[in-house]
Length: 288
Image 1 (spheres, rainbow, N blue to C red):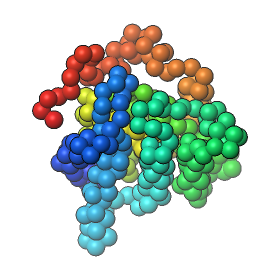
Image 2 (cartoon, rainbow, N blue to C red):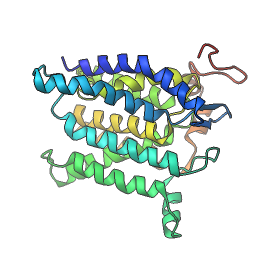
Image 3 (cartoon, rainbow, N blue to C red):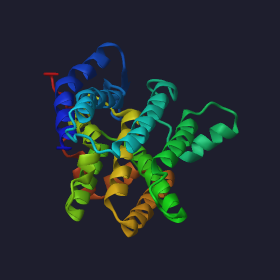
């Protein structure tokens, strides 16, 4: 019955995400994407809103009728998911002007703090650390295991922020990761636990991929948090260590090299990355 969270959140997002994103455009909540199209921004706020709307009947029925619709562990992880999405929204709102290039990388944030400047990126990093420490506490891990879980959660969140440079890329990587975890471990545990938040992400991909909306840090943080939690609750200790090593390497690579340029140089990755995306000169769906 816990897949009800996924099902209901998909229904809510299907009904409301499109109208709400169009309303964002009408009211000037927009930003230019990588090819200078003006799109609704930040779509991450809409995804979170859809999840919270779906939560209302699920929480009431789960408590009052005892239908077992929500995993009890969702209380722990929802704090992290909603917290990092809010920190991303702070960065979206205050971090830069509407048409400025997106600042990326820990080095830039550290330099800003050292220079005495207000850095929403630094606030986001410190806030995410506190939220991750809270979410991973009390899991019964030994000291090194606790630190590894903490790092895996934080670095997964940051990696998806680094990936969010092309329409639909974040959602595609998340979808492949989720499919691999569920198929490889023969479980739907991530969907049971996080379906409330996963549903709107899947629906929202139709809008970001077709360049009608842009996730923003609120959206990429949301998806990165879901990815990190999915890894933590699905993999055994060895699997988590391997995942941490891979994700740490990708974070380090993204800090010093362009992930987008690397993808462009590899034909298979380039084809998958551009699959379903508007090509140059194409216009977004006129029926929107």
